[in-house]
Amino acid sequence: MSRKIAIFDTTLRDGEQSPGSSMNTEEKLIVARQLVRLGVDVIEAGFPASSPGDFRSVQEIGQLAGEDCTVAAFTRAVTEDIDRAAEALVTAKKPRIVTGLGVSEVHLKDKLRMTEDEGLERIASCVKHARSLVDDVEFYAEDAGRADLDYLVCAVQTAVDAGATVINLADTTGFCLPDEWGEKVRTVAKRVTGIENVTLSVHVHDDLGLATALSLAGIRAGATPVECTINGLGERAGNASLEEVVMAIRMHESLLDAHTDIKTTELMRASRLVSRITGMTVQANKAIVGANAFAHSSGIHQDGVLKSRATYEIIDPAEVGAVGSEIILSARSGRAALRHRLTDLGYSFDDKDFEDIYELFLEMADQKKEVYDEDLESIIQERERDVTAVYTLNALQIQCGDPLVPTAVATITDELGVKHVVSATGTGPMDASYKAIDRVVAVHGDLTEFAVKAITRGIDAIGEVTVRVTADDGMVYVGRGSDNDIIVSAAKAYVNAINRMIQTSRSRSGR
Image (cartoon, rainbow, N blue to C red):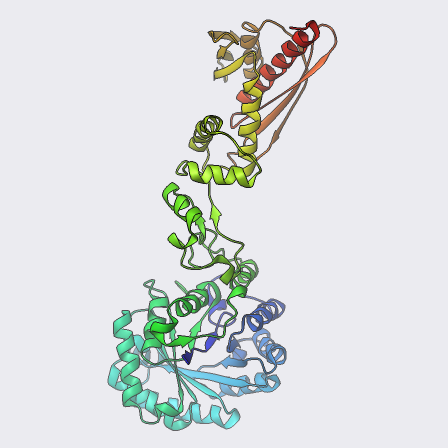
């Protein structure tokens, strides 16, 4: 049986320290409920001495958690902080006081203004005091990543001798390289007497983008709990990301000889909840929970995934609560992806018709960042309108503005295959376009209604124009056209209405 790696979640304490991410008590309770559903082993609920709100949050989360997980309260190495934490934790079934001190030279000298001996004395007194109040006390060695190794060992030994039940080594600035960090954790485990009777954990930050790698290095060196946050939330570049650490352990369980009890199907929900409450948007390319984590845009990748998901996905999206793999249609997509999406939409085309649609798709993809299902529907409808067309609008160029005279140049092909290039001026770009079209088409009508709407998403959405044209005999013909350019949509709609008028006239006359 592999080692269990306990997940210590500090989203509500360290994560909340990220600028702009503070949460009130009600919001913390919502997140805490999700953390319980997720199955974390420890919830660091807050810093009770920092504010009445944090004190209340720790109290209420203590009640909420019950016996499902440990509830921890953070303190500085100050007696008053520790007392306040103990008061807040009275509601918790499994309380833990987390107290500690900076152990690097820069922390001792520049921040705390202490000598090394004074630091050891403070560690001993605070751990002993905390242990007199609760049975579970965690000592965190802040900035252990930059600490002198001999002094770090002394500090940890002092905390163990004073009664700490958990020793947390923190690379507070994410400074170490993974191998270096792993060796530091391993050395502390070897040199501290009695370390086998306490729990050794790691807490790292992502200043160099190494937080997940550092956490895994700590696990390989013997640490069992890992401290992390949802979405990697935290000060500066953030903490180790819970979802990344958990899924890395899951993917490499044999190599790490480790597992967690996290319900991974709750990861996506937890990520979105924390993002919504804190207002901290998850970057699209974020591992595991980003919007693009299971999205494929490259034609080569799409073809591979459609044949076998494992070609480009090492995680089944369902494992983390994601809806599924997503094929993103763009200018880089290939025929396999387009055909797959069209099939999903219920369309089936022979090779010749598909190639026509593919060419129209590429034209649209060159104009838009992403082609949506509605865009494909529009392409198909536009093509169907063109298949039976008497006249086809091939191109339209507009020149307008103040003080320019609105001018339209249109290229139109008739049913005999003859291409006409005509121009006209008008009171506006639409008027000029319609007058140019009238120079080619055999019938004319009065425009009696004009409507436009966006039929797809985004700032580069396709606009669909619907027109009603009244013929000389009083019959009304509806025409529709769609394009990224609304003037082109309007011109296509007018040509479509003219085609309907001609076809109806021919049908009546038996032609």
